[in-house]
Image (cartoon, rainbow, N blue to C red; front, top):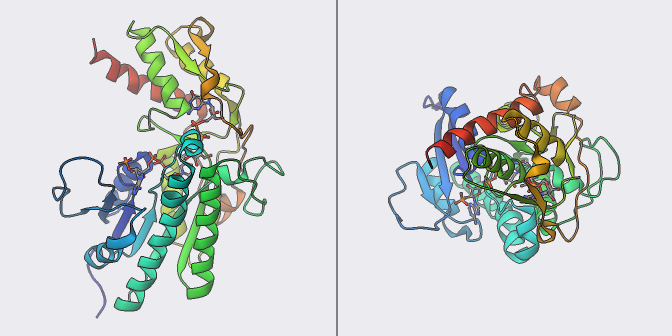
Amino acid sequence: MADTNPRRALITGISGQDGYYLTKFLQTRGYEVFGVIPCRSPGIGEAGDRLYYADLSDGSNLGQIMDRSKPHEVYNLGAQSHVRLSFDLPVYTADVTGVGTLRMLVAIHEYQQRSGQQVRFYQASSSEMFGKVVETPQTERTPFYPRSPYACAKVFAYWQTINYRESYDMFAVNGILFNHESPRRGEAFVTRKISKAVARIKLGLQARLSLGNIDALRDWGFAGDFVEAMWLMLQQEIPEDFVIATGKVHSVRDFLDVAFDHVELDWNDFVETDETLFRPAEVDVLCGDATKARESLGWQPKVSFEELARMMVDHDLELARREL
Ligand code: NAP
Ligand code: GDD
């Protein structure tokens, strides 16, 4: 009998930036959204009937979660996603970000065999895999050169996803997403660190901002635009991998310019360099070519770099006012 219930999606990493925007996006399309959250704090067993406690470093209940949520689509966003931190926690990062993806693939494959239901799988792959880039711009055909334990873990997960696709005829795809930010961005990532500091400096709540390598260049987009591409990849007839990027490159300095200009301050008066924030190996520049996504998915970014930076500062001004 045909399944007439709403489409169901299971999201690991639902409490993160992308989990937030993807949940909203899917709900507006009538999806029933289920989520996996790691067990870090009190409240065990009170996560709600669509939220399950699970840790990607422990696959023991992932099969059970598949049985309970019966998803048509799984979005694997869960990860130790901080590049600098991955140098301090390389084994943990490999386990959660790399092997965690494999644990999810095993659980899905076994669920498919048990239930006879097909599941579509999205893997949150990363432009960090291009690392010390061998060509610019980077496309789906550019070889990887990972430069951090995080990037190595993502390369492992990328190939496991392709192996499950090719070995078991699974609809499993990699979205190779370039940096994407928003007011929901974690505060340890450079854009949000800056937008939060700009707001607090403007309101007299903070005096200085310490940063590492402000010459780094990234292809920065808006997370709200990028989650739509994740969904589009799972609606295709054939499972394929896609680069998702804006194609425009800016430095951390550029972000400082726009963010401080927005509140009529000069960042040179407030920013200092902290050597401890530099990475043992840096990714100097990333620039993606999303031509394939534009042509096959009809996807393109809507929010510009300048709009993104101002949106984040405005949001953090609101939050900072509550501190007064
Ligand atoms: P994020 O805000 O750091 O969210 C990561 C999510 O993973 C959080 O919900 C976190 O839970 C969860 N998580 C961490 N450790 C876990 C574990 N051991 N088991 C289960 N869940 C765990 O990251 P994001 O920016 O939304 O990115 C989403 C995904 O896309 C990540 O896989 C990231 O590596 C990848 N990606 C991000 C970008 C980007 O620019 N944002 C670009 C390319 C790829 P807690 O909230 O409890 O910590
Ligand atoms: N976090 C941080 N903090 N980065 C800084 C700082 C600082 O104080 N100062 C300079 N930077 C530089 C970093 O050295 C890096 O070159 C750049 O700013 C961006 O750093 P992050 O915002 O931490 O992002 P990322 O590019 O390392 O990684 C993000 O994007 C990847 C996609 O390319 C993360 O979201 C990854 O999970 C994601 O895969």
